[in-house]
Image 1 (cartoon, rainbow, N blue to C red):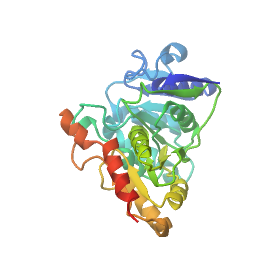
Image 2 (spheres, rainbow, N blue to C red):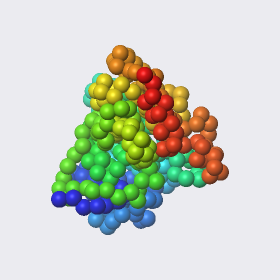
Image 3 (cartoon, helix red, strand yellow):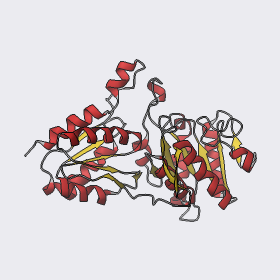
Image 4 (cartoon, rainbow, N blue to C red):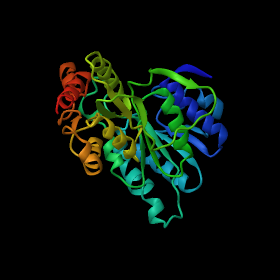
Length: 327
């Protein structure tokens, strides 16, 4: 049986269920305890699990990320929350040089079962230093898994899988999704990391995206359907590993591909997908691959510039039409 809950509630349920299941799981981060989470994604958890398992920290991301990695080396399963992944830049040495590499450097003796989670990318008028999308940065590093859910159902199932995973997982949310509502089963379920979701079936153009930008793809597909263009939308869910097979199979059917993500264009996830599709399915393409990213500049503060900066349904529609009418 399903009920409708918010994204933040799905995250809290996933963490709470896994903490009840395994006493080695704990949550640490800024404002996760007394304040119930900066975005209320850990509401009620301090009352249930106590201050030894739901731990408020100073504003010291490098320090508490390092504590998380060290405790994972010693048998615990920490969930480390960053108030935003923009702040994870302070802790990136612990994430990249310790969490991601320890298994290889120890010859397989040390697993690091840690989840680093929090919101990524833009969230309104937060300007250049608080609006960056880091999915492709972390996906570039071997040893990490990178998960970017787009809805409450996926958030819960993927977070539970991430907590149980023996490898470090980067779990990227969005401040603009915490209030989103969706159906989530009452019974336990898991979603496999690395398995994409075919969100909408179509025959004319494949749209590949992930995270909150999926909502812009949905809007675009609805408008395009009114003009007789049926889009197939693939929600990657995870960007390391990427479900290349799902993308390629869709392209073989539609013969056209548009990639959409909230990141700068150079070295993006869409760059990687474009390379793999041209290598594995070049003969099936009837038009050049198009991609929609953020503009290649730091994000501004002014609302008009924010609108121009971000991917949106209008830009997606233009890109889809640009490939749909190529014969």
